[in-house]
Image (cartoon, rainbow, N blue to C red; front, top):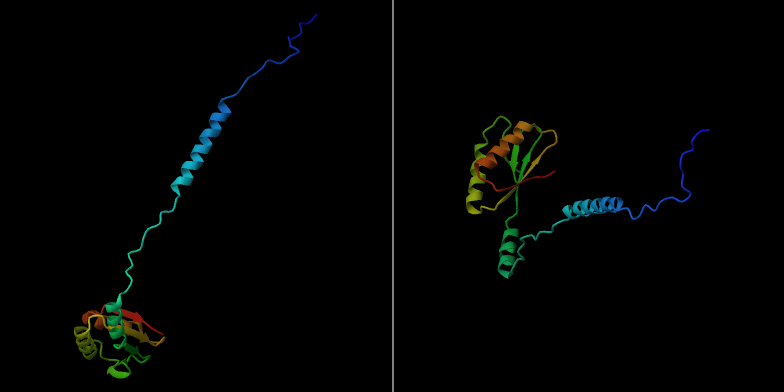
Length: 143
């Protein structure tokens, strides 16, 4: 006769399992650590609100409009709609002198370069070189 394996009718009490709870605690700890690392820190901008004296200065600056330098398709250049450079003049000496005098009078003089869409890029660089020579600080491009 074959021996039968012993099987108790009642299963033993396993008790409270600690390992799954510890694993859960480590997962929660890792999740909170990652969430705390992504906290966005807000910084304060150093903006000063203008006072009355600065308002007067701003109003005086408005009286000095920006200089418009137009670059035409053929390469000619104009200073506030007055011709100042021919297409073959790569140095643009008269433009340099005029810009330099303006910057000496007002160091915050703004200049807007308005090239024709079909103007050559080298001509735009020539005008930028003239602005660099004159030490123009406020330079922008317009359409």
